[in-house]
Amino acid sequence: MTIQITIIKIEGYGPWTLKLGSDREAQLQIFQASFYSDLQNLFTKRNCILYFNRFDELIAISNGLSINDHLFIEQEINDMYKGIEISMAIGTGETPLDANFAAHNSRKNNRLVNKSKLVYASEQIQLMYNNSAKSPMDMFAQVLHIDIDNSTKASNMLSPYEITAKIMEMFSKIIEMFIEQKSMTFFLGGDNFMVISNTVSKEKVSEIINKIQDSQNIKLNCGIGRAATGRKAVQAATEALDTIRSLRDKGILQPVYEIEWH
Ligand SMILES: Nc1nc2c(ncn2[C@@H]2O[C@H](COP(=O)(O)OP(=O)(O)OP(=O)(O)O)[C@@H](O)[C@H]2O)c(=O)[nH]1
Ligand SMILES: [Mg+2]
Figure 1 (cartoon, helix red, strand yellow):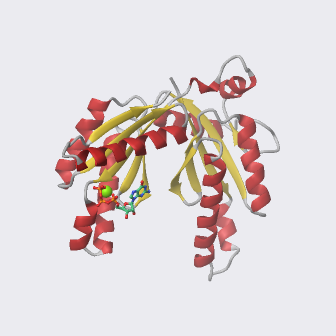
Figure 2: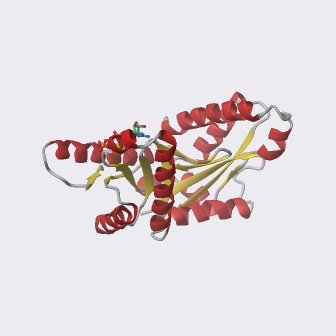
């Protein structure tokens, strides 16, 4: 079973930012926040989830999102933001990292789906969405929602900036451990991380979570969610995390819990 990843990039962002003059930083931050909000909205409406990679480059789980859907999102962004152009590269693979490589390669090899638009995809993906006999919904996503257990207690002892320093150290550790499994990790805010982790078993997840806990001297909880689309997999992962919390309230400690939706 495959996963589909889309890499969204603002084209020519560097030169565009320079046009704003030197009093530009706040303007850029305002633009970036609003762009992220609009883009997340366009993807979630279509059962995808968008993750922040860097302000001018974002990554989505786009299972089932057709070439035409992508062209439509591109058009909507063009209509909303005059002078801003985005490109989207679509890739599929067994693992999230492989799907990411496939997306990156179709962009690198200039596999445009339409000469006037900036959507890139391999011939195989284009055929898949042209051929209605083969459903793109043979795809699936596994997402981990990782959260620090009882971080509010630690927050009372450390200042906000010191906590951020610790969270970023943890982020780097999670990235390092999961990239070995061809998984991709994103920071969500607060003490929350999400890992796109198709093909990683619950046992392997537990093993990695234990290693990170030992190295960082912190306790983690991890909800595992599986579903056909990115949005549903994320919902299942968060529900699994909430289940861990309610079990804990009843005195049952189960730091890794999985929910699968069909
Ligand atoms: N992005 C995101 N952030 C969250 C979510 N839940 C909580 N947060 C953030 O995480 C911070 C800490 O909240 P919690 O994780 O609920 O608090 P905690 O003390 O660690 O409690 P437990 O996680 O239940 O052990 C909050 O202030 C939010 O910033 C979530 O589902 N998604
Ligand atoms: Mg927490």
